[in-house]
Length: 308
Image (cartoon, rainbow, N blue to C red; front, side, top):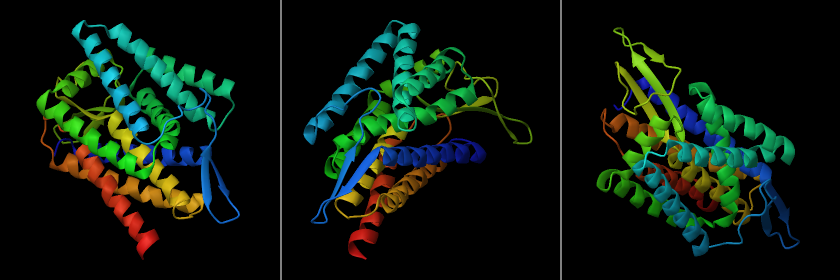
């Protein structure tokens, strides 16, 4: 087992909660209408940062992949020259804008921007474990709200497959994903969940309050992490499944939300299996496991709504 059982359960619970909150946020951004012929149309309200790119199909896939490559290249540049400040500026803007999108689903644009700005300042300049992990709950729903409308189900499946292959290459071959994780942790601006903990002689887990300088904890401490991509991509996929269930299956928004949550549950189960199977002090690509969980959940949802 990679981490203590209590910490593993806590990390998986965090993951599952943000998936549920993200799906609910996506559903609140949806505008569902039924045409006279009975066809269901799903549209989305504009976000507080403006209209979404007018993309679909392979263009959406290329857009996401290009963004990942450019973003990774920039961060590797920061790593090469030790530019912690530039990374923190980039991370600050990402937290501010994505959190604004999430909050903008529930409140007005001005209020959303102000609250998200305060969250970004605390996250980057006054962070501790509580502030960091709470802020993470507002980052990834905003990303999903932006990108779910750009994908159909087949292209969302293709995205998961390609990201899984990339994740395996980045962790096992080039190992640059490990380099990025260590750099982000050292800068104390890590994109994803972080749980530093220690274990006493009685095996009692103690959650520490500060983000450590090293991803492998020192002084008897350990660090459990889950990267931002491992949170964002399954949420995007489950959101696309929710859209598909309404447009193709005619489900109500509530039923589509409940059914797409099944995908999140199976994804969380796959993530839990990874943590149980994994060994201490070794790095593993999470996306292949997460993708498997997504596909198993999708298969069950498809059986329940289109076959049985």
